[in-house]
Image (cartoon, rainbow, N blue to C red; front, side, top):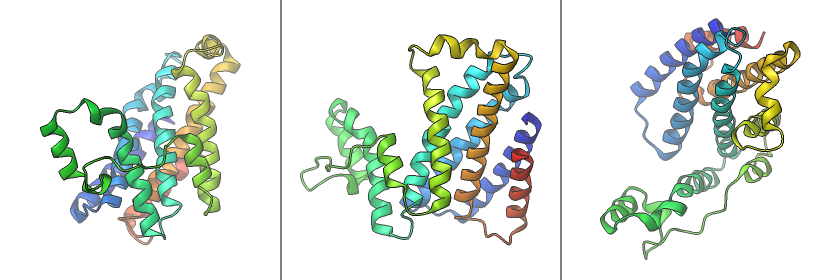
Length: 234
């Protein structure tokens, strides 16, 4: 899996070249590219850990924490993609995600910093430069909002399931101690590897889906992407 992941990331690098060549800076494309870039970078960053899950069993923890971020990014991505045919709703969902940062930081900005944010993101503010009242986001919002396309619904269920497990690494609680020690038994290590491999598969399918915004199905690069994903999933 580690070697296959390295080859997959190499294909993603070529996809990035195509994205940059097309130079589409629309809000939706910027959002898609941001998610794609995060998935690409994280997968590239954990391939060494995946290669060594048996020799360095604690690598399962750091890989799981990184993949927790990926699973949340996939939920973000599918939340928008599920309404991609409704441009107005898609943009509203993107703006809700963009505004989430500002809900907690806007009051801490200096006036000149706030003015700069308003200029960069005018669609997030009303005429009085107050942040618009966007929907409060969370994993439940994403899950409930992904209801149109069956393929997205199925992938969302898998991503959410893995997100909840990896979150028990992130948030210390009753299960954390046992989870940290799981890799040190053969059965437990197999479970950890299975979860990591499953999460990588979720990321791979998400990368292909978002890449289709820039790459046609009949392009050789898409064929390489398909081949690389099949290697990961088999």
